[in-house]
Length: 543
Image 1 (spheres, rainbow, N blue to C red):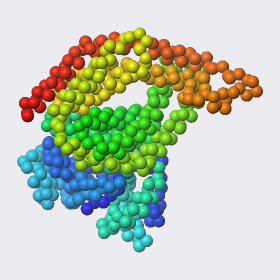
Image 2 (spheres, helix red, strand yellow):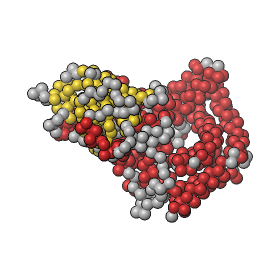
Image 3 (cartoon, rainbow, N blue to C red):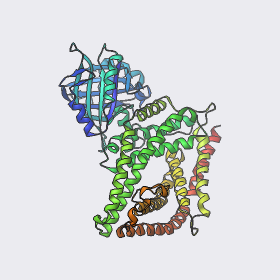
Image 4 (cartoon, rainbow, N blue to C red):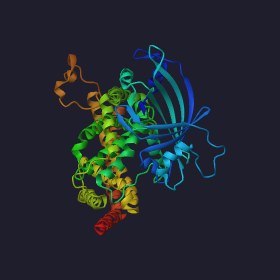
């Protein structure tokens, strides 16, 4: 039985702190060694080994070749419990053509799972490992601590990188001895429990690179709704984790954007599923997801403002010094929001949320007492989402339509689009065409919402020198002029920028009706209705 704790290392400072440790929880750490690991995971084309609850790996470790069959196991907190059969052996050189050689003992274990199907390479992991021993007072190993720089390599060329810390309990040692070590590690900021294995993250990456390939789990018409939600949410959960390190570092704003999008899709999936599966059982998961999404969203909104402001300054050739007041206010608020986000990502609360979520996904999301199948339910959901969108037809283009109405349309479009993305496997080509058409309309409405939010913040900066307007102006100390002095005149440059964003709002208002008519004329609504009806007829025929 393999017992190990796994953590994502979110920033370089944390990685450096781990490297510099000489002792932990009163135990000495050895100097250690650097290992280069080349892992290849194998399965049949229909993933029979994975379906049996195992992962088959061949590892080249410096000058050793290790074969292992690991159970996918369970997770409690950060601790993974997995059955493991490991054999050191040398594969023939060269291997038999079109075959994967396995040691006879391991071949005997996997043969019942394989049937007549040949083994194929699902994915490759390259790891640079810094491995150290944690010793007790007598110099005997309690556990092995490994800091891994991991690179997932896909056959088509794309790569994914992340850093993980593993602490594996030595044979004959107890989890009670491991507990104080893990408690000490929890004190390090930028270290978050990792409920998923490298193999699972690698599979999810492979499925994104090649839809329908390794790691993909297609939604099928006969799936119960709970089973379908598990298939939809599982890759989104792993994608959320893939962007934790980048979001924490804050160097590339697209990392946070991608992490937030994964969360937004998951929240929409839960919202759509409310009538059809046991939402009470996932109440804490939904709450944890909402908290994390809010923390990230507050930062992402400011990233968007900065990106569009930088574009304006460059495009118009403006002097950045004229906008120093805006930059100062933005910096203060951005630091505040990022600190809140970083604290949340490193919190026990976020770790518990991830553990609960992953456990639920492994066990399968719960259906109601009388489960309903995808083919029965999805046509109803699609029709409802489409009808909600089309109800905006009477208002779009009306003079003086409040900006909040455009934002409501954007939200309904996004929910409709996500619905089609979730169930595109059972809706067919019509869903793919509709998704592309919805993106065009959604982008116009997104720009309109961004401009509206920017105008509100610019007015607050000009009038109050704060990122958001105070709800009670009379309570401000500066509201009464000191010694009769008048407030300083607002910046001409900021006024100019405000007027530019206001003009942008009006220009986008005029573009929305045109984009809406293009959407309707594309035939997308009728095509989607036809796909939903066909799925409904399939369900009726099956019954």
